Length: 128
Length: 500
Image (tube, rainbow over all chains, first blue to last red; front, side):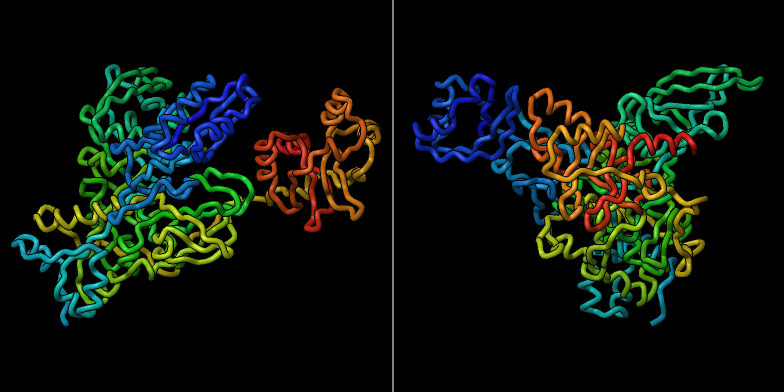
């Protein structure tokens, strides 16, 4: 399960993620961090069974969290199954089935958006 | 054995006894029966390809307005079409971009929208004549409202296509998609085993007058495509077909980020198996078709060839480049190429599609695709750069650098090591910043270390683009040992352009 931690300038100086790991004992993995002076977001991979506790621990500390149920959305009417998206994905989300149609293992997605830019047919959007 | 004729085959289509297979099925059949046996057994092999084909477009006849107009310029959904034809004829090209929406919408999307039956806004202007007095026209039409809508593509169905990667340290946005730096990915195009011309590389059945499946309609090959290059196995075709009969599934507008628009065109070509030679040619596999992997990091006509690969290797998902396994992805859809070859097979079996005998062969070996004749050499960096360039040794103070810049009355000061190698650059602006922040000590602390440079032999246009991309105004020119040979500034380039 992926969650997005929305970072605002007031929480940047605090070791929020470390605190949550210590409190919950959950093995968090930071997939992507994009934090600029005015804030940003960190995408964190959380073990499925510990998701609720981790989200609660972040919220208790005043952080805004979104759960990425569908991190990347494919519009099947627009997709022509070319697979252009495959080679720009850093985490190997996209692959071909045996019949050369495109499949996505969305659990691996870190919402970097590289595939969205690559898609010639505008078939991909990052989930919110 | 005596060969079959196209009439024999078409008679079998009529009586329902025709034996059709796709080009994917053929290699096994030829392996089992041999070319002679396969030629006896199989009547037609269907091929298919579905990918970006930029040299595509459509002729439209809009019908006369009242009062009539001779369109001098015309826009369809804000995309300009060529109107230098008779009064209300126009040619909409796939890669022309929308005036208002830029790269997100182009001629290719107009064509897709026409085929999908959507309304298209037309705006035309004219100078007005006695016979065509009208000067401005605005209307909205669908494909059903206009007379002819004929897809006419000057270059489609490349026999095969070179593979792209990028050895530079910058992401590139190309017609082969996004190419990640340091050979971060590989993109390719073409249907390999299903590619029409790869299954008939001597053009025995594909030529002028061949009836083809074109985006769901029945179209024709009308001649050699532009840049037809049989000598290097890069043959192409010119094709046409009725846009009104097409299926949106096989005509798709596309945008390559940072490059522009293109049209995904679906083409299927039936190859009548008239003799054993033709049967043998259709046994081609992905492993038999070899293409070069090119470095698109070099923005020149001749790009360096990194290696050769087969479509079999490309389709495995990874290829080796300089000892590293790199992920590949196709830009064309093999899934849909297969659907096209399958649909064409069904149409023939149902008796609704008959292959034709070609009227004339495509030009064969001996024809070469020439580069452009250019008048006068393109100026290079060596022609324009300032050869006398003042540098400063690293380790000096900011104050010393400021003095050098002031005395020389310039903006960019390359910083060199004891061995005279370029290690950094300092600008008047860097010095102003350093002074404001009270960092007047060592030059090394404030200089830019990742210096963008140029080479003496590079054409000016490439260097101008580099300056623009990095948002800088000068590049030190270095040799292969990173010794500073000169400096080239945007001012030098502007002066040159002004003289042209």
